[in-house]
Length: 377
Image 1: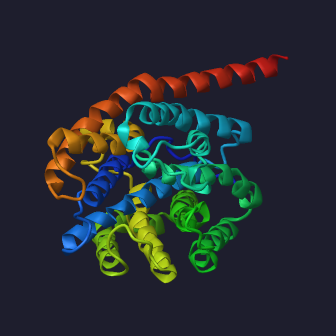
Image 2: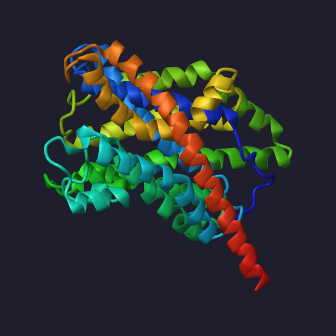
Image 3: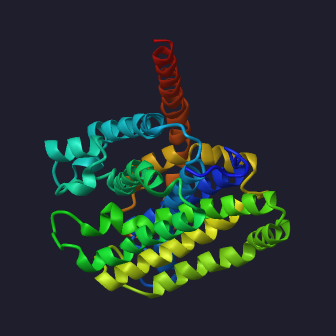
């Protein structure tokens, strides 16, 4: 793999804050769906399209992982750290929801196949694999596919020139827009949540990492003027926020409203709008990672908890309706949103403090000790 002219900073606070924005945006979208305010008025349809913060998470993962693809940590370390980061908190969420939350058994308790599939992040691939309170985790199933794919892509083109890498990324991303037209249509398994349908969302982050590397190389080679121009344009946040809002607006106007299956062309266009939305929010902040708002203590805390916020928010949302005495699809969006956020954030903070962070540290410590033992032997 090619080595960048200088090592990128391992932690970018602005992108940590962007995680918080994405997590809260996804809650808004799901509350809009659940309260029946995802159709009709333009503002409702735009709230529904805040599910575009899912591609923001995908692009963010792609950026953070690909920018370090030259570190040479090895496949085994990569996979162990990914699993240690994702699975412990995920397993706790799945088990607790399946055992304790009524929403998981609405329409009938999940069978053994669906239960095992959810535990193994394979729910997208089995009939009736999406379970109440856990339906949103289809996207985590997709992300896990990307995590498994990343080293293979790095092996194929990681040592090639940046031009070749970018061409390969674009070629892989193009599969996202071919798949809707060749996908099977089976009511038992939704072809629209297959991982390869979303390669372009992940690819937006990979391209942002390549841009970051190009800027570092340009500055190292004395082409600082070009780099400064790119960073200056990236720093004009209003342009990129406006572009992201435009992507949401166009998506809200184009295609079916509500939770209905989109046609092949509609689905491909929606994925493209989601990619534009994600690229608009990740690319500029990735290459010019300074933001007074996103760097703030509140946004940093929410960013740390964002994975647990995402894991738990649908289960918390299922509790809000009976607690408030509000029926599904009966409106009260603002009230339901405030209550869902108020319930989710403390639960997420506990999940992070008691499960997510300790498990990640324990797995990393175990792996370092394992590597040390093997080196001694």
